[in-house]
Image 1 (spheres, rainbow, N blue to C red):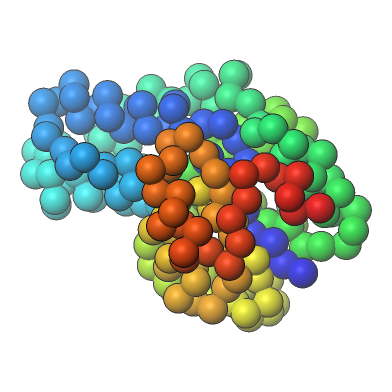
Image 2 (image 1 turned 90 degrees about the horizontal axis):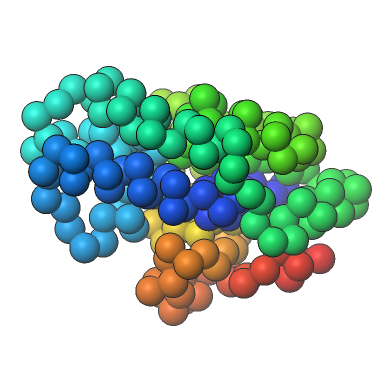
Length: 209
């Protein structure tokens, strides 16, 4: 089986750092945002969020400057303190030992993605570690899931995609992937919606074994 994991809020407990940096940027620049901003920006990645800030929230700042400011805010947390979520490391190791193909597909850039997974000692367990920047699009685009499956030498129908974000699992499901919703406190208000969308919803990685 081909497992494709989101990182933030799925493999690692990083949503407070990830979303906090995004919200601090908006607040520091006095930019108003909708109540469901976390749901909107989580699958977009930094470049996608920057585009959203400019096009939808009318931020009068270049995308490069937005990305630079947000990355500077979150970099230290990813490289030094953010932990794996409970039972993730042992579960990923067991899945690998069982012969499954494991990959990561995340909105986070390689600048934070790679050192974080390496620090946690699980980077080498994945056949592919992908950022949305490797595909030139976001997890809100169904094409990214078809392309990921293609790069794995299979089809979307043979992949299980795990994410804590409602928009991401909705789009992955449209591609034909089996989708597992993953509990994270940042998306708690969307649990029932995610359960309706997901083929399976898990509160702990222990449920994968």
